[in-house]
Length: 492
Image (cartoon, rainbow, N blue to C red; front, side, top):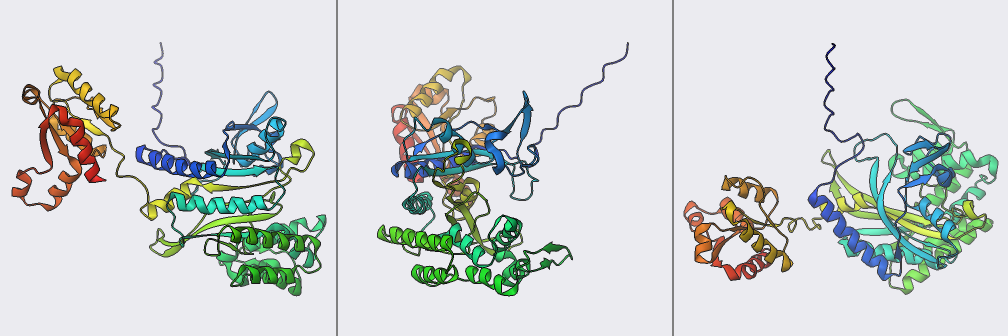
């Protein structure tokens, strides 16, 4: 009889492009999302949780790759239908509004938070699963809804710990860009490919500079490796119209709007977009949102094709150091805009909508870079076990601490080596350890060790000072909760 082949053990590794999140990371994210939700709720938005799975038909042409439904998203076929993990939170909102529009108020104001999935090649800082945090208003045609989203985004950044002066929200309008395209001779269905090249070129201004963008607007550009990228084929005078658009920002919003009006003169859609920008600026100014928080900036184009009007982007302006030690601005953490055609796919009718999406991981990284996350309070008080026969007494202690609102746990590993218990408390980032053996129970006392202060003394104090153990206290058993609360208060 042949021996059965031994099955190889599975590799214990996270799949490429995915990551695991542990205690402090999850706690930090939850705390940040709670602050964001509080702002959204204050603005009158309601929470919505949609299914993680949508039909590919519902996602439609807004898939990353429409010709290959299993590319760009994680998709599979089931009963001759294609299903996919959601790749953002906006496409599911369009489906929900179309499905439940008779039951929902109009306008419908919702926020949503959760993971999304992209079946893309992973790379440094580029993951296949990541968190988004969205807020959208569906059914409001007025650009007052766009101005409100921008104001709410400003309040949100400040609520989570991004100080005024460390960010700016930049606002533009795709109608203005469409007007520039029209003036540059790029209107009409036959110019769709050229318009796409122009959009991508504008979006690369920071990386390629004006000369590189000008090349892409014309015949094309050859990069340092010799690779050639085909351009939009614009004549020089038409390319300068687009270049003038990117250079239209002035010292004040009013001056920028005036310059844009000059550039789109003769284009009805362009002039309509300029008027909308002017209205947004006036509405924000009336609420006290000056250019130090929100500004008109023609360089914002946003890559997605479904934007139809105002677009906005939140950029963090403080410097961080990259992996090569070079200083650079942190960059964008949120973006959005108006997308009046998205729900139309389901209903056949134009439904105005506007919204913003925050990159949760990016914003968390920014808060860590500024030292504005709550890592220190992560660990629980640990009740150590000196006598396993007194487990009921230890559980009573931990119950009293929890009932007082103090995070606490009993050590449930092997209690034989007391040193290992303190090592465990250290790994848990515990602020306090409770110590009680037979002698302490007989005397009606407990030992309470301030682990934070103890660690500082161990680093800085002389041996004699350490022997005095000023970080450990002996208190009557009935004063356990009060003393722990006092120590925690001194640490914070």
